[in-house]
Amino acid sequence: MGEVFTERTPRVVAARKLTRRAGRDAAGQFLAEGPQAVREALAHDPPPVELFVTDAAADRHAELVERAQAAGVPVSAVSARAAAALSETATPQGIVAVCPALDVPLATALAGTPRLVAVLADIRDPGNAGTVLRSADAAGADAVVLAGDSVDPYNGKTVRASAGSLFHLPVVRGAPLPEVLAAARAGGLTVLAADGAGERELTGLRELAGPTAWLFGNEAWGLPAEVGALADVRVRIPISPRAESLNLAAAAAVCLFASATTQQLLGGAVSGRRAMP
Image (cartoon, rainbow, N blue to C red; front, side, top):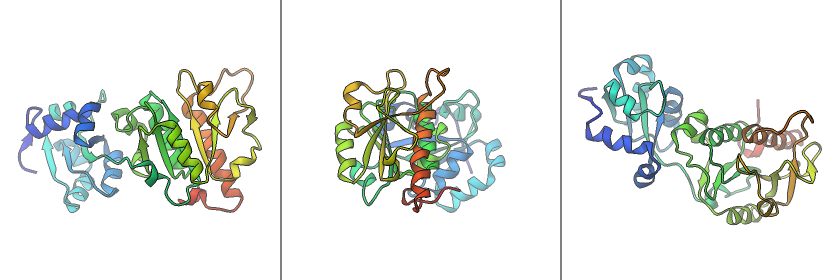
């Protein structure tokens, strides 16, 4: 791979700026660290613009290095200190891809006939956002929308928590929530809000059979009344009276799979993407 880049090499210095949102926004790029994220990034179109890898990681993940080279992705050897400078984890994995931003306009994400969409309203925790992305992908959702002031989907923790799912489905970020919900309804989706104080219960909810946009609120304060009022139905998940509540990621998984399994049982592939195993 030739020259070994250090933490002071200009290309590493430029890539390190992508660990901050301002740097990501300015460059239109983000970092995907670790073999799973890099594998999914290499399978995506467009592919990464560069792969940084230590000698040790290149030995461990030779197939990824070969795949990157075959795809024409520049592969740059870096020192362990350079890899640590590009990492946002306590234990750097030594392999990091610089990827072009993936988010799409709202109209693109909702084009066609979507049947299942997750809308996150002012979600702030990057791990939660990544986990919801992973659950939405597993449920066969057509898109995920991070509305309003939600966390950046390219935050390193979000990318890791998504376990590669960030590369699998359309992601929209920053669209105003009223605009998102109006577009969802125009696309034939019923807006269901996950709300512990909802007037309807998830079990047996007939709306699950149709095209659905699930609205999930902030981790700390949930859905404010004025936001819940924007939904067609506010839905509560029945839980044991001993439990205080479900956290955001768990509630989102329950709701998304409730829609996905209901749609599949009634005779269709989940959300037009693929049937669940």
